[in-house]
Length: 114
Length: 111
Image (cartoon, rainbow over all chains, first blue to last red; front, top):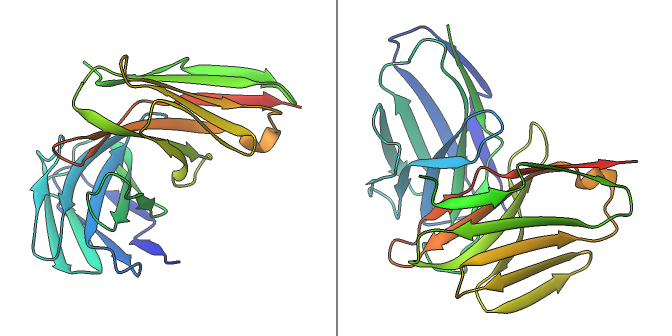
C-alpha cells in the first residue's frame, strides 16, 4: 500500500496571486496527475506526468503550470488566481497509463480566492 | 459537450433497495471504464473497472458493459446508508491512456 499527501489542505488566496499546491506519493508510481473538481462535479485533468521530468497538458491546463521535481512529487501552480474561484484540486498517481492501471487519489487541496 | 454522460444526476433509494446508475461515452476511442465512489469531503476511491462485454460482480456491486454502445451501468443491491456518495464514471482513452470523468450521480440511501 501507499499514501498520497497534499499540502496545504486549505488555500486562501487573493485575486491575481500566484499559488502553489504540492503532492507527494510513496507508491513508487511513475505517473502522476492533477485534477480540478468544482462543487458536485466530475474531475477535469489539468496536467499529468508520465515519469520524472515529463509534463503533459490536460484539458484544463490554461492558467496553470506544473513541475515534476522527482518521481515522488508533483507540484501545481495557479499562475494568477481568479476572483471568487472555488474548487478542490486532487492529485493522483498510477503505475502508468496502462489500461488496468488504477489511479489513487490524495485528499485534495481546497482553494478559495477572495 | 461532455464526452462521458452519467444519469441520473441524483438518485434516492430506500435502505435495502437497488440503485442503478448509468454512464455512456460519446467518444468511441475508449477501452476501459472505471467506477469511483466519493463520499462527501473525501477523495474518490475506485469501486470497479470493466473492459469486456458482459457483467462483473463483486459483493453487492455489479457492473455491466456494452462495448457496442459504450454504455456501462453500476447496480448496487441491498443499498446501505453508507453507500450514499457521489459515483463517478470514467472512460480511458485508448490512445492517450487518460481518463475522462463524467459529472457523477449523487446517490442518497434513506434509512
